[in-house]
Image (tube, rainbow, N blue to C red):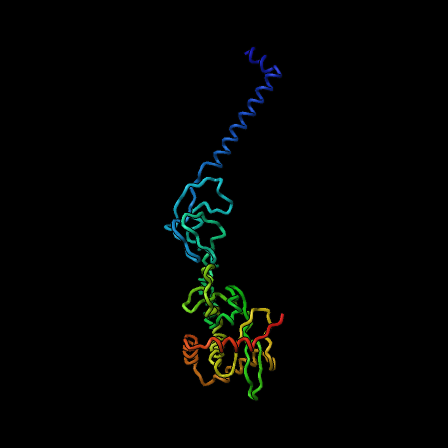
Length: 288
């Protein structure tokens, strides 16, 4: 013991022992860090290709060991955080791929689930509004954007009047003629045929009646919210004036007859695209 005590009192010996201890601790720490970094961990990856806007189930995933070196903070490492989520609108997950947080979305944020966004408790109803590539500004009207609907018509004296019939309608989905979301596959965006949104029952009936009159001298024009529709000629009137015009012009037609007529008109394959394009272009002017 005396020898050990004498040895420890030697400054050179203490220094050497301290250096050895520090090197040993550094070696241990380095190895622990390397092992934690290099040693693989088990994470969920896609077992198959998962298309955009698809609800992810457990059988679509498999567990794979991945080195931590290849992982970033946004890689999801627990399957319970993936199952039940949806692939985002513009994301297709390849088979074997790790899954990133930004690739996932909750059910209520997926445009394909637009029908669930209709507030039935407030009396809203789902509305399918017929459009084409021109009336949607080259398919630039996106889900969750807002639109105004303008109307022009001839009054009792044959003079043109125009105004905003509906304001700030939120678009919930954009569908093609088969009812598919045109933005579901970003590599193959479809052609728009319908905008889907919710309206109160009274506004639903009013817009249907306005569509009923489209072939009888009135024109309906979509504008992105904030833009202004300016008729080439005519008098700006209130929404109430337009509503009264529509109701008076269709007062003898039942709601059921209006619904059936518009449905048949929208689904007809005899629409002359060229005439529609010319009519829309001639009736629209935008100012900032």
